[in-house]
Structure formats: C-alpha cells, structure tokens
Length: 76
Image (cartoon, rainbow, N blue to C red; front, side, top):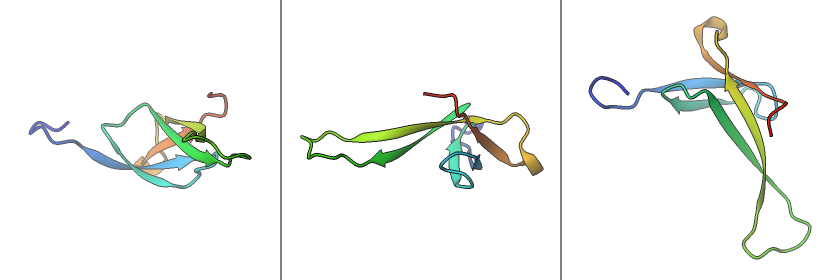
C-alpha cells in the first residue's frame, strides 16, 4: 500500500509454462502467482469442476527492470 492507503498495482510478465508471455496486474508484488486452467470432464458432474494449477514465482531481478514471474515446474 502507498502512504495514503491506496493499493499499488503493477504489470508483471509471466515467463515460461502454459501462461508464457501473459501480462497481469498484481498488487504489492506477491511472491507467488497461481494460474489455473479448466480441465474437461468425461462425464457430467453435479456442480464439480477441475482446474489445473500452475505456480509462478517472482524473479528477484526482472529483465529490463520489469516485474517478472517465472514458471515453477516443480510446484504442485
């Protein structure tokens, strides 16, 4: 947050993985960003859905000064 209580938003670039190159707005530079992608079900469900989960970790030194998150292939 800024000194006046407003949230600081920044554009970050996701690097690698299924969301490679996407630009997202994040508040206060979180250490981890989660990306989900819906999975198709073979049979009808009762309000249940399945998402694939991908984790991106903030890179300590963004290239060109930009905020970047790198794909963590070892995450859940």
